[in-house]
Amino acid sequence: MNPVIYYHPEAYTTSGPKLMGRNAAGESFLRGYLTHSHASTFWAQVQKQEHGQHFAAQVKVQGRSETVHAVTPHNLGALAQAGLVYYPGPGIGQHAFHRVAATGAHTGWSLCGITHTTSSAGAMDALSELITAPVQPWDAVICTSTAVKDNVTRLLQAQANMLKERLGISKLVLPMLPVIPLGIHTQDFVYTDAQKSAARKRLKANDNTLVVLFMGRLSFHAKAHPLAMYQALQKAAQLVKASGKKVKLVECGWHANEFIQKAYQDAARQACSDVEVITLDGRKAEDRETAWAGADVFCSLSDNIQETFGIVPIEAMAAGLPVVVSDWDGYKDTVRHEVDGYRIATVMPEAGLATDLALRHAVEVDTYDMYCGHTCSLVSVDIEAAALAFAKLFESPALRQSMGTAGRERAQQVYDWKVIIAQYEALWAEQDQVRLAAMQDAAKVPTKLEQPWPARMDPFHAFASYPTQALKPSTVLALVDNSLEAATTRLQTYQTMAMVSFAKFVLPIDAEVAVVLKQAAAGPQAAIELVQTIDNARKPFVFRTLVWLLKMGILKMHA
Image 1: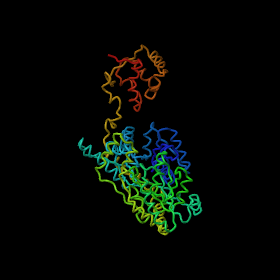
Image 2 (image 1 turned 180 degrees about the horizontal axis):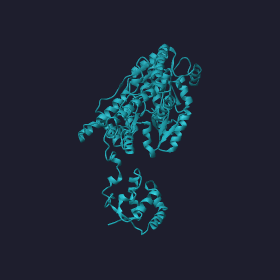
Image 3 (image 1 turned 135 degrees about the vertical axis):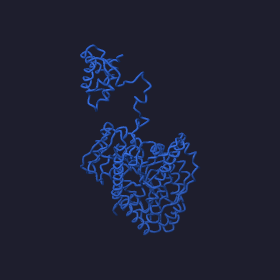
Image 4 (image 1 turned 30 degrees about the horizontal axis):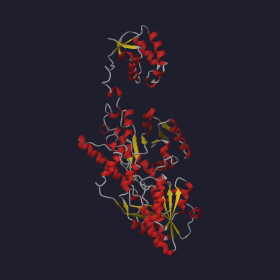
């Protein structure tokens, strides 16, 4: 497979002004793909030519020398040469419309998207639109965890139920929904004894200091509410105080603003007074290395619906750290309870008790951040169980070592990009097989509708009632001027005008105009006769420009 990567530089970098999880995932994926892909040629679908050049540069940075092709909106049909487009989001519905609009067929290529957060309005709309968009069984949306696949399935079922009740639909065509986790570069999280020693020194952590690490955005409303972690660490710190041990919490991330930063400081001061809290900037590589190399235990008690997978626990496992995480979303897949660490039970109200939150978000009373914040305020993590998990790990270096070793092996064997890219390529090959098989079975290929994209119809169809009449093949046309020379000269003058030349995309070339005018000079005749000698591939385009010649006053309707 030589898949096409839908590429915009912003989606594949963590150096932009607003760092989000999808940026980190995109950057990591691209590096993993370019390192481990078996492609013989690299393809990118881009909106601008310079983005294609940027992609080609990234290919070279990763040491690949294969040919690079870029496909722009001007030549979408070239995507059929590759056969599959990977889009770094769930919204492949619009791209399915692009496919049929550009080629007139549903089988030109396969589409593969992926979930990130599925709680935002944009993500939920993109997923629900899969029901009505022309996606096919040879398309796919990768779900990064079993929990998010359940969420996506519930959303699609609700949308289908609504359309069944409203329109009586009975047929559904859905993309594949495979579960493939995100990957990491496990070698990036292996630290030498010297690096660990230097990190501990920077953290001012001696042999009696137990360092717990939280890595990620420091957002109580949109990531992980820290109060449960603070309370659990306080309880655990009191338990080990008698043995002379001290607990130090490293929060390696960033606050969106001073209000949130102060909220964290106030909460830590009140809830875990016996724990020293240090904040490192997670946007800086040196601070991340200090955090990973210097920690004894990793913690992430996520309780937020914006999370779908959660990359940091497997990064912690790759670093050889035992983990204490909430039993929540993707963490349920990645962390084995009492093997790699501990998954702490979570509680949420039953369905039907948050319709007001959904409505407030839907009508924009609440921003997305407030929607997530209100929801997570009604999700709890078992503080007592978390405290007990911390205490067990604090009291036993051997347990920390065994769980850390188990986690590292799991990260390397299951979540390294070398393994994940192989799963992507297997999926893409399966999609290609389904698509090619469908092409051989006409019954499996949807009929091409006259207007395959209802919201983007041919304007001459959509606005057919606007004009007095339509130009038809039988419409009789004639030259306005008495001579071919006069008509040609006048048209050439008009073509120099800015108000005419701006539309050069829809205008015929000079040679085609010459053919039409020469034919018209023979006398009034049916419009179709004026383009009879035009190449068949161009004939429809030249025929429609007969109206342009009417507009210019070169041709006229002949009664």
